[in-house]
Image 1 (cartoon, protein in one colour):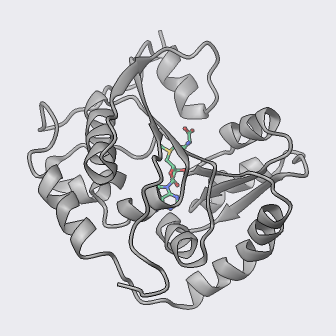
Image 2 (cartoon, rainbow, N blue to C red; image 1 turned 90 degrees about the vertical axis):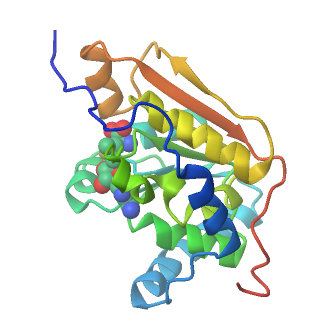
Length: 232
Ligand SMILES: C[S@@+](CC[C@H](N)C(=O)[O-])C[C@H]1O[C@@H](n2cnc3c(N)ncnc32)[C@H](O)[C@@H]1O
């Protein structure tokens, strides 16, 4: 059997500081200064998203898409949608871009927190947001590097109607579900998940190694974070 190390952590359950951390992020929103990097991302994305929204097409964000396999899969499942595969790694994206892309699929190199801040500011809404196997940051001192412990998290939830997270670390999925529930007030739980076919490179690697997989599906009840017209 293919050997992939299992996640080792000094946590044996959800992080005890998660609820307080999220409470702080909800009360004192993330407000990094805008700069040329975010402006360039706006210029690249606005025409695509505004056109799709004006045409009534769904916009799907595959966040941290890596080599883009799941973005191609999403584009096949939703041929009318605009699918954005976004990752900060030039190397991984260049592997994705080597393949012929269907018209609705676009890959972009970007820092995701820039994208979620822009979505909040400009009213961009993702009908589906996928977070497939994000970096787990398993040391307890790195809670704030996990997406649900990061100050961007409320903006992530604000930006989407549905969110799908998958992880091979049960604690990550449990914490993520707890954070969705705490922020939005709707119940949310992590569940063991056994895909028939892998839709990402990491998913295939974990399946071949016989690792258990977990997913969280969150449906936005209409929860929004603050008012972009009067910025925090
Ligand atoms: C573990 S890989 C998973 C890739 C892919 N989703 C898969 O399942 O094969 C995590 C990906 O998230 C990307 N990533 C992590 N933090 C990011 C950030 N702040 N902005 C953009 N991409 C990020 C990494 O470059 C990497 O490709």
